Every structure is written in C-alpha cells, then in structure tokens.
Length: 115
Image 1 (cartoon, rainbow, N blue to C red):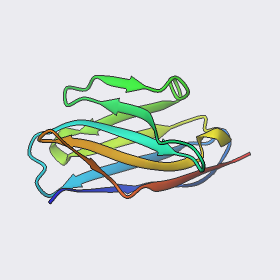
Image 2 (tube, rainbow, N blue to C red):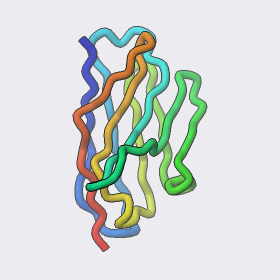
Image 3 (cartoon, rainbow, N blue to C red):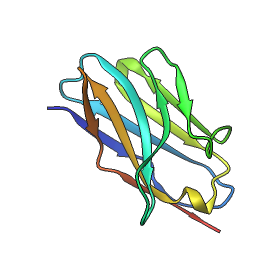
C-alpha cells in the first residue's frame, strides 16, 4: 500500500514564499517520476513541475523561474519551493508519484495567495 502525504500549504501574501513537501511511504521500492499538480476552483488539474529519479526537471511556463522542484531519493520525498507567489497560484496542490509503473496521488494541500 503506497501513501503520499503532503504538507506545507497555507495562506501567504502575494510576493511571498511557501514550501511544500510530499513523502511516499509503504511499498516505495523504485519510485520513478514525482510531480506536483494543482487544481484551482472551476479549472482542470494541471502539471506544475515534475522531476525524474535522476533529477531532470520540467516546469509549467507559468511557474518557471519562480518555483523549484527537488527530491530526496533515500527519503522518497519531493519538495516544491514556491517564490514570488501570485494570486493566480491559489489552488489545491497535489503530489503525484510513479511507483512500479503505477501512479499515486496525495490528498492535496491548499495554497492560498492573497492580493
């Protein structure tokens, strides 16, 4: 049984910073790609950033140069550092991990950016 637990969401003013973390537990042998998605009210879930097991990263154009994804492989944990936050970054942020070719989701953590 694989479980992804996110932490670090909250309320921040525009221009501020927040850090998210997501730890995978259970049968986590061979954690491959890990990623962060977000879903704003009334919108589809979208990819924010992804990182491979070797450390290659991908970012959505809207967050490039503001967000940084990283991971700690021995801890099966992925991080998202969010700087220069904007009100349009407000969403529920979800962690995703591919383990043994299966995708798993975290429960989501709310990030709210006030103007």
